[in-house]
Each structure stands twice: as structure tokens, then as C-alpha cells.
Length: 317
Ligand SMILES: [Zn+2]
Image: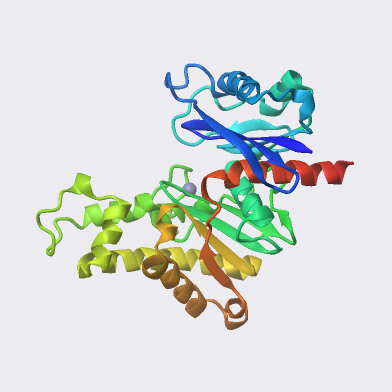
């Protein structure tokens, strides 16, 4: 049995043929923002998915279903894009499930991309065999997914797991979602870069220009022992830990996986987060809690989308 996994993001759509054991057999990606979304993303997906299948000589009848991971607030019951963050036009309201079902006459499931990453990690990644897992991705924003008792937590419509948007500061920074003090405003890479830029000029690095600051550079400077930068990074890690401690107290996970480019920093990042969370959480919660890097990376979304499709098929069948 083979499945088509589709991971629809704001810049590209990725396709992969995924076997029943989670192995990715082949993959390809296509641009979706080539004309500023004047061509709706869903139109691009309907077209490029055919191109992908044809280029590998695969007919729809060779497939057992299509699992879709998609950016935005996804109504998983209807398979529709219910809400959109950022500036993606012609995406809200896109009837993903219905359009793909009509085109391919196959079962289709659609789940938010961050939740799919969690499912992918649980199926064949670092969370394999774990039943209670929280996955966060620290990047431009902060995404997340929650696996409880072996199932991804979707809530009534599929919106659950918006870990970037619970507040850790009631009078804090305004958030794009309309709330204040959201976790994403403090714990994302964007937040760290903003903190460093706000405190410039740095006494230790007066020659450094604001526009040169990025995540990679920040960690290079920490590694070289620049104390001012290190203390900004440590304050950021403290904010990340505070949020994870609250999540730990609510969900009692056995494993927290952290993704995003910064997660490759074991000593300067992951180990510090781990120590802080263990120190701040109530003893029984921290005792058997593992905190590790999410290493499945780029393909976690489309593999997780297929994992959900298979689980759903078993549940329905
Ligand atoms: Zn928010």
C-alpha cells in the first residue's frame, strides 16, 4: 500500500510517496508563491500533484489515499482552510479535501502542518513508541503539536495545538492573533533576533550592524563567549522554558521534541532548555521527562499527514 503525502506551505508544496511503514519512496517540491498567490495555492496543488505523479509514472489507482498537511488553521472535519496567518491571499476557504477527492477519487485527510510534524515524529521519528509527546518548532514563528494517549490532539475542528498563542505575559507584546503576550512573541527565533537588535549597539560588538543579526550569527557569537549576547540568549531560553513548564504541567508528556534550525545546537540550546525545564517543573513531572531535538526535519509534515490518513482509515473502516 502506498500513499500520497502532500505538505502545503507558504513558499512551496512538497509531494512524497509514502509506504505503509512510513518510508518515503520519492519526493519533489514546487513553488506556490511564484506570482504572489494570484494563482491560488490550491490550483497550483491540483496541477503540480498531477505533474508529480506523472513524472514518476504513478496512476491514482496505484494509491490508497492522500494525506495532506497544510499551513493555516485547518478545519480537519471538512478539510477546509478556515483561517490564515500572514499575507497569503486566496488561501482562506480553500476546499482542499473536496477538490482532491473530486480530482483523484481517493480518500483524503487534511491536518494543520504543525500537528502533522508531531504525527510524523511519532510514527517514524524521535517520538516513535511514545504516547505523550509535545513537539514545538522554533522558527520565524512558533508551531506545535500535541500527542496525547497516542493520538494527535485536534480539538473540535482541528485547530488545537496552537502552542505559539497561549499567553505568558498578560500585559506583554501585542500578537498578530489579537491577544497579548503570546508565547511566539517571546520564544520564536524572530523574538530572539528582535531582542538582540533592540539592545544594539552592543558594547562588545559596536561594529555589528542590525541587519546582519540572524540566528546563525547569534549562536556563533555565543560560542565565541560574547557575554552580552549570551545573556540575551539565556533570557530567551528562560522564556522558552517557562512556556514548556506550563505545557508540561497541563499535559504531563514523556517527551518534548524541539525542531527548527536552532535545535541543532545541543550544548548552547537544547541542554540549557532541558535543565531549566527540569529545574522549574514540579518534581514528579520533570523526573522522567526527556527533552530532545526533533530530527525528522523537512519531511516530517508529509509523512505525518499520511500517518493521520492511515489512522483515520483504520478508525473509519
Ligand atoms: Zn498570539
